[in-house]
Image (cartoon, rainbow, N blue to C red; front, side, top):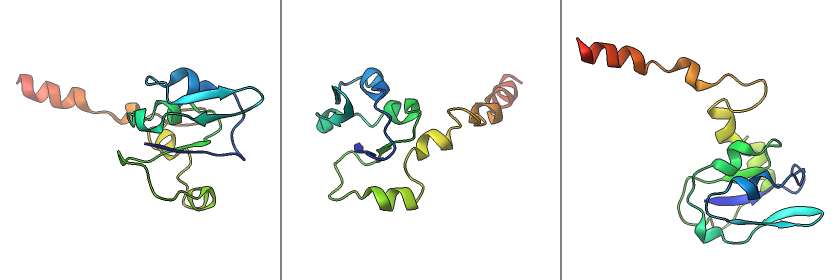
Amino acid sequence: MIELISESRCIKCNICVSVCPTNVFDAVTESLPIIARQSDCQTCFMCELYCPANALYVAPQVEPLSTVQEKELEEAGLLGSYRNSVGWGNKQTSVASRDETDKVLKQLKK
């Protein structure tokens, strides 16, 4: 579930607002977006994937966390961590380049 928009990292591009399939965010003129409908979050990570500033934290839990501290998330390297783990973005190596599904499929056809 979406838990945090980093005030210090957000560049106010509103990409998260645009890509969210369940309309969780509201754009705010000249300010960072707000998490307006957190309970509608489907934990799809699209907002985190598309955020060019790694300013979002989506927790894998389906229920809101009781406390989320930006400083702790930053220190733990969790802001934008899903995006980084799948290699999405500039100067990243996509994990798709390591996909070996084709080898498994070839073995199944034998």
